[in-house]
Structure formats: C-alpha cells, structure tokens
Image 1: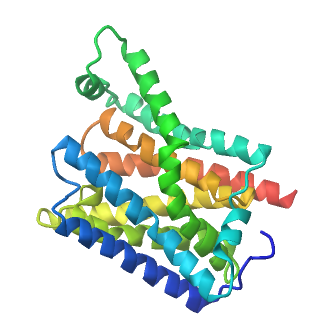
Image 2: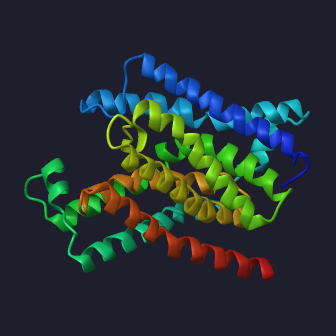
Amino acid sequence: MGDTTPVIDTSDLIKYIVLSIILATIVDIAMLLSGYNLRTQDTFNRALSIMVWGILRMYTPATSSMIILKSKGINPIKWLKERSALNLRGLLYYLLSPLIVLAALSIYTLINFILGYLTLENLINIINIPNISEASMLLVIIISAYTASITINALYAYGEEIGWRGFLQEGLIKNTRETYSLILTGIIWGIWHIPAMILLGYNNVDLTNNISLNIFKIVTYIIFTVLLSISIGYMYQLTENILIPSSIHGSVNAFWNLTLLISRTDIVYITVLSLISWIPISLLISIIYKIRKIR
C-alpha cells in the first residue's frame, strides 16, 4: 500500500467506529428535523431527500478516517491517492465490477423464475413506455443502472469505501485474521445504518408497526452487509484500490430496486432471497482470492 500505511491500533479503530456512527446519526437527525423522511410517498421529495442525505451520510466514514489519519501524523491526501490510483488493470476491474452484482441479480431472477414469482408487471406500470417490448425495457434499465453504478453511484459509495475498506478493513487485518476482519467490517457497516433505519425509515423500517418484523429487517440487513463485505473486501484485497469496492457498492445501490420490482413484493421473501443470492457470489470471490493468494 505504500509508505503512508499507518500503524492502526485497536483504540484507533474504536475511535473511527464511534466517530462514524456519531457523524452519521447527526446527519440523520438533521434530515429528520428538516422534515424529510425516506418513507414519504412524494416522489420528488423522496428523491431529493435521498440525494442530499445520501451524499452527506455516505461521506461520514471518509471524514472519520481522515480525522484519525491526521491524528496519527499521516497525510490523508497522500494516503488516499495511493489507494485510488488506477492503472489499466485497475480500470478494467472498475468497469467490470458491476458484473458481480448482476451475477447476484441473475441468481435472484432465476430463483424467482423457478418458483413462479418472476414478473415484469411492476416495471411496465412504473415506466409505461409505449411500443417497447418487456425485454427491451429491461435492457434499457440494466444499461442505465450499469451507467449509474460506475458514475454517480460510485462517487457516493466512494465516501463509505474510504472508511470501511480503506481504513477499517486494513486496520482490522493488521490485528486479526483476514476473513474475521471482513466479517467484522460487515457487522459494523450494518450497525452504522441502524440510526437511519430508526430515525428515517431506511430499508423500510418503521418501529411504530410490527416490531418483530422490523427487528428482522435490521438483523437481515446486517447479515446482508456481512455477505457484501466479504465480496467487496476480497476484491479490495485483490486490487488494493478503493475505487473497485466503490464500483461494486454503487452497483448494489443501482440495481437494488430491480429486486423490488421483478418479484413478489413481500419484504421477508425479497430479503431472504437476496441473502441466498449473495451467498454463492461471496463464496466464489473468496475462493478466487484464496487461489490467487496461494499463487
């Protein structure tokens, strides 16, 4: 990673985690006090809420890591440049990384097809483009999501990945086993989202209704971030570049809505099937990384 890899100890990691959660919660509270809510049905206000809240919140891990690095006497800009410089190989990884998410989405789609729950009716009703086939419409959506994955969504995700992969994962790996580090990063990453779930209804959480269902949503979301952390984490270990995890993370955000639109709308069904779809992807990336590491 270069000369500016800091010596991160356990106290630094704890400070980073606490600071990231505090800063993210402050953003959530500010958004709540401004009157915005992620559960609102108003399309324009919801989109505006997500854009403003998203960029502010997703850069709290980056801000926290920069603060800790500065306190350690490390130049944050130099540290970040070393982990974000793209050569031709890195650029190829960056551009192709969304295929990992598409692979998980394909598994999700295949299982729905086998179970007889696959439907494009919701897509047709929402988009409502005349004289276009279902297949063509789906292709347009996939291309649009792919484009967003490697542009605006990757830019948003970059703020998180600086902290989760660049700072926390690196620091944990120096203190414990690699796989454990990725799992722990995923758990902390999931917990970091909880204030947004409680305060703003992120991930459709509403603790005023059906507490057990909402606890299920929170727990399964953390399991999801663990699976995702394994995939993204090993890709970061493989490439040593924060931009590659940003591309994958951005793709997850870009393609997530498709899982809500192409199958049953039952949130428990969607959540469980999403987890099942990511398990083989996480295992495959783990195996590929282990094989590459042996070589």
